[in-house]
Length: 316
Image (cartoon, rainbow, N blue to C red):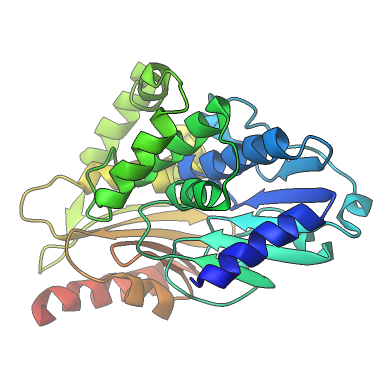
């Protein structure tokens, strides 16, 4: 991330009258928080501009105010600036019409996979895209409205695991303090994030009982498409939502959640100490050093990935 790129991004934002913000598909709290937060910032600082936020429905993060995506026509992209938030690869962008925009900017914190925007501001040391976005707003000297600060803070909380993951640094807390200074009540954020319906808690319990282990201690869950459909839950709930059931098992360093979908097997990989991103990239995915994902074509390929993760435990 170059200082001159940060200035160039602000110049582009000032130049364009229409700006369209994109988040990644099946958005998490960081993707939505970054997108909504930046939208609020741009609306507050450039009231004459047309600012849109597009993408998938927010799902369980719908409690974030104004997270429902805008519905816009293709013609809106003509002569517009598209800003892509929180995705490391082009196939992850929700709504590929960003390619219709005149200019594109990507703001992200994932490990590099490819360049797909005209201007890219990527900082892999940032705990979240929301935190990176907040830092940019501060460096740009723009006004931070309280509703924008709240959305960005929500993104920081979710992607840092409530500031527990080792991506959390002194800068993280400095950015959080800056956002808190804008004046918002965070109590409902935690209430919405960490309170679940009893049915969801029971679903998580059923997945705990299905955890298996490889020879060298990799924990994993494999869920067939029929089993997904039988739960009545969304693919996102099963794939991203259930990977955390293995996170706090004593003696387990690496874990993976496999979930069949109509398009292939979704793989959510996590580790406490190892760079599992290299495995995700090998199978066409990406993400962070210790939290990555991929989609493989079938169970056979998923089991090949599992063997690779198991071998990593020997090589460490």
